[in-house]
Amino acid sequence: MMVSTTDLDRAAALLGGARRIAVLTGAGVSKESGVPTFRDPIDGLWAKYDPQQLASPAGFRRDPDLVWSWYMYRLDLVSAAHPNPGHQAIADLQDLFEGVTVLIQNVDGLHQEAGSRDVVELHGNIRRFKCFADCQGSPTPIALESIAYDKESAPACPHCGERVRPDVVWYGERLSAEAIGRAVDVAARCNVMLVVGTSGVVEPAASLPYMAKANGGRVIEVNVARGGITPITDVFLEGLSGEVLPRLVEALQA
Ligand code: ZN
Image 1: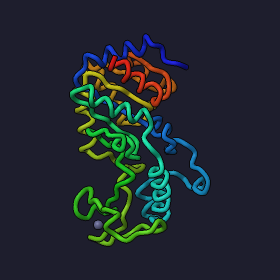
Image 2: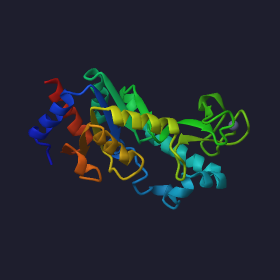
Image 3: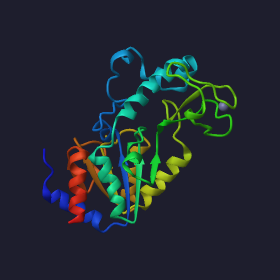
């Protein structure tokens, strides 16, 4: 379904008066770049594993090499992917507004690759690694380039010998207090929050549009289907972010 020009103009008008924009993005945006998400059924070789085994501290403790291989496989997929026009349009917003902060649930780093500068990575980044024991403080980043490793076995932390793991938030783990604190602040202070490609069910991200709204912000949603936050949106733009967002940016430049 095509977004109506009227809805686009309404969204552009709301954005037009804004100084601070928060953009909250989710799985839909990555999916348009061909990056499989945890919501998709796990494919091929990995289908026999439980996602909890592949992405939890307990799973890593049980079989670090299995989890490491899974993340190396996913890292290859992410490295082969490219930002899509939706990522690009979000980065382009920086030229139009004083403050644009992107609150990211995806771990693939594609917003940053598209040029978004002020980002909050709520669930970490699959391209970064850290010590499983956080031996030098939380987190203890480990640059993979600086150590010897292969794709089959989780390497040892050069400081303490514990294994190295991806710097992403796993099942049963808390989001970083710094990231969530920043996200709440950005949500509460924005004039408009643009919610893109997220179903609005995974907490705490799902609460952020409500915080924006409660503090006088307006909410614009771009999604292929109505979801949990649609009832509080001021404008709902139905469609793929890679199609809708470039048109929205165009309408703003008109
Ligand atoms: Zn360590």
